[in-house]
Each structure stands twice: as C-alpha cells, then as structure tokens.
Image (cartoon, rainbow, N blue to C red; front, side):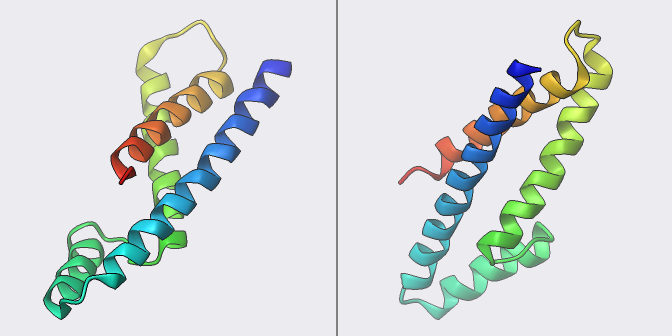
Length: 104
C-alpha cells in the first residue's frame, strides 16, 4: 500500500507539471503574431485531434486517454504486479514522455 501511495503522489505531481507545460505552450502559441498560425493551431487541435486549445481541457483529455492505454497494456501484459501499480507506472511513463516533448 505504501508504494501505491507514493506512485499516485508522483503521478499527481507530474500531472501538475503537465498542466503547467501545456499552459506554457498555449501562451507561446498565443504570442505568435500570425493569425494564420492561430487558426491552424486551433483547427489542428479541435478538428484533427478532437481536443481543445484550452490547456486544462487538453490535460483532462490526455489523462482520459492515458488511462485507457495503460488499462489496455495491463490487459495484454500479464504482469505479476497489481492493476493499480502497473497502470499508474504506465501513466507516469506516458506523462514523462509527453513532458519531454513539451520542453522548450
């Protein structure tokens, strides 16, 4: 149980960092002086990816999809660890990967 609490706390902290990183990307995008870029950026997010230009909504959508991917991974992995530990570690890894991509 102790490990579960630690992993969940780590995921919550990483989710906060993710929201901050997504906010930084949105601010950077808004600072681009081109209206064409703004339109393309929003249309790409809302049309192609079915998400939002709002960082909070992006973070929520990522968390939802992340859970689905990690639940699927657990279903095919047959790992010895429990469901919660496996999926939370998976979620940490996926979030870390996205944060790496959002670095300036």
